[in-house]
Length: 169
Image 1: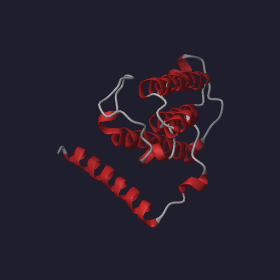
Image 2: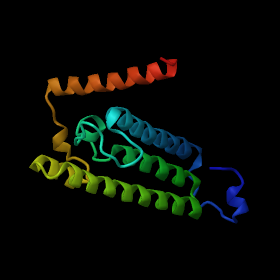
Image 3: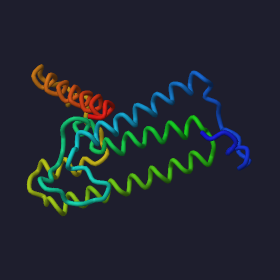
Image 4: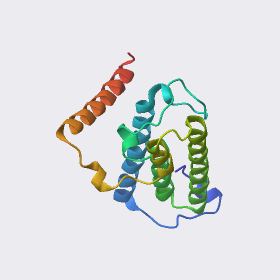
């Protein structure tokens, strides 16, 4: 990642991804970061860098949260893994593993907070929190036309927000 660091640490890459592989991995990294950003924007006021109760706190299961339980962490893990894979050194792999472990611990803390703070008020909340890191089954992606258009509207909203942010509005 940073030229010369591997040489100064006496490390050589464990594998060579080549230029084509490097480009693919960089795109995977950007896809992971974009997925995290989409999740962050989707949470809106409910997002916080610390684990804290917000007004109107609830389990979110739409947008990227309808795909995986922890999309911010999932995207960051994808980006970290891609970065470590393209660097291909022991240091990069260990560093990525430690950060991923930290993200896992934080997600687990958030799950405990949601269970305690929101309480087990319904089976749906219990099922959503207990779902943890699991990805939804492919069958759950089958939706009606109306639902598909509603989800596409959400993607358009994200694109509009990104466009406005880039224009400084």
